[in-house]
Length: 240
Ligand code: ATP
Image (tube, rainbow, N blue to C red):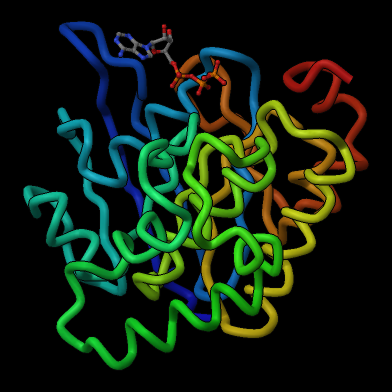
C-alpha cells in the first residue's frame, strides 16, 4: 500500500449553495483498501462522493488520485483516469437491457478488446446478470439492479470505486452477497473502494478502514475493526 494513498482529500469544503456542507474534510484511501464512510443521515457522506466524482465543484481543498491533482478535471476525464461513481439509487437505465446497461460502462474506452474482456468478467462475477442479459432494467430485482450498477462501473476497469449506499433497500442476504463481492474484488483484483453506508455493521465488517462523519466533518478515522469495537464512538455517532 502506498503511504500517500491512492485517493487523498485535503481540506475539502463543498456544498450546494452559500453555506458549505463539508467542512475541511481530510481523507486517505490506500491502494487496494476498502474504506467505509459511515455516519448519521445528513452527515455529508453523499456530498463527499459527489465532490470526489466531479458532480459538485469544490469551494476549497485538494483531491489527488495517484498524486495527480483532480481539481477542475471534467467528469468525463475523471472516469477515464479511473474514478467510478455508483450513486445512491444506482442509475440503471430501465428501458435498456442488462447487456446494454453494462456496455454503457465501457463505451468511452478505446481498448475495445479489453472492454469486451471486462464485460465477460462481469458476467462471470454476477451470474444472475448473465442469465438475464436480455431483460430490461426495470424487470430486475433491487439486488440485481445493484449488481448491474456495480457491474457497469467495473466494465470501465476503475482504479477507485465510489459506492453510495449499495445496501439501500436490499434484503440482508443480498447485502451480505454484495459485501462479500467487494471483498472478493479487493482481494482478487486489488480494487480500491470508498464505500458510503448507512448499514454501519455491514460496512465495517467488510472495510479495512472506517471514517466517521458528523455534520460535514470527519470525527474519527480508524481501522474498521477498532471502530466496530469502540462502544463510545458507536453510541456518540452511529446510534448502536
Ligand atoms: P443520507 O445518508 O441521508 O443521504 P448523507 O450523510 O449522505 O446522508 P448528504 O446527502 O451528503 O448526507 O447531505 C448532507 C447535507 O447536505 C444535508 O444537510 C442535506 O440536506 C444537504 N443536501 C444534500 N443534497 C442537497 C442538494 N441537492 N441541495 C441542497 N442541499 C443538499
